[in-house]
Image 1 (cartoon, helix red, strand yellow):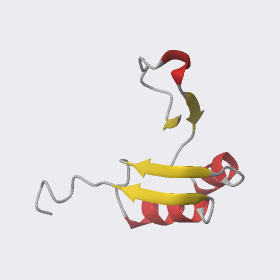
Image 2 (image 1 turned 120 degrees about the horizontal axis):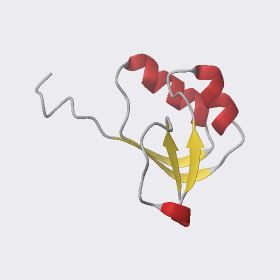
Image 3 (image 1 turned 135 degrees about the vertical axis):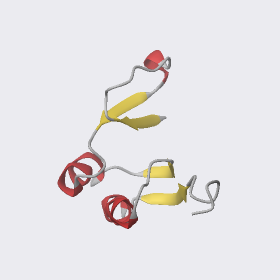
Image 4 (image 1 turned 90 degrees about the vertical axis):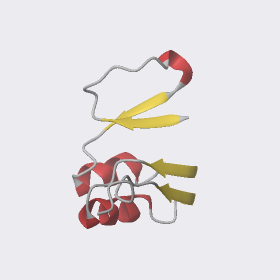
Length: 78
C-alpha cells in the first residue's frame, strides 16, 4: 500500500506502507511522482476543486485500474 502525504502530519503506519510526499496541487510534481507508477486502485479523499481533479486524472492517466473519489461536498449540501 502506498499513501500520498504532504509530510506535515505523522502517521502510525510504520513500515506497513510506502509514502510519497508530494504537493497534489502541483501538476509537474504529481506527474513526476506518479507518471510511471501503476496501481490497482487509487482512493482519493483530497480533491477540493475541478483543478485538483484534472491534475489527478492527468497524473494517473491509464496507470490505474480503478479511481475512487470521495467528497464531503454532499455532506454540506453544497
